[in-house]
Length: 144
Image (cartoon, rainbow, N blue to C red; front, side, top):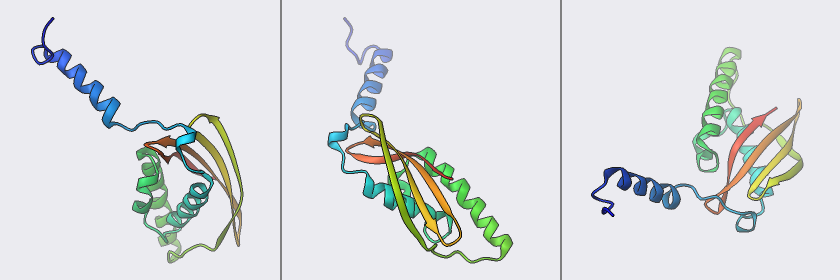
């Protein structure tokens, strides 16, 4: 048997094994995670404020996956352009949170719909939270 350092391919496999298993994001089971409803409500409110230009998207970075961040960034750019074309200023929207419906398709995963009421319309925000590193992280957010 060769020593791992003597075989570069085996050494690379060991490094990848260690990096992925010990330093990557670790899934968490439901019992290791806090109640998701406060995060769902706060994240929904923050997403609506980000799209309205009243909050910086960077404030959500800790709570969302890279894919969600990129998706929201595109929406922020489009919303900003639409406001500029109409000559509108960014302002904090007056909203209230309505019903929160939560399902759990598997352990450590929450899918929810949060109803958001504003003066002009009612919207639904669909979110998927996944337990990672003993906290919830949004892996999907869609404002309908």
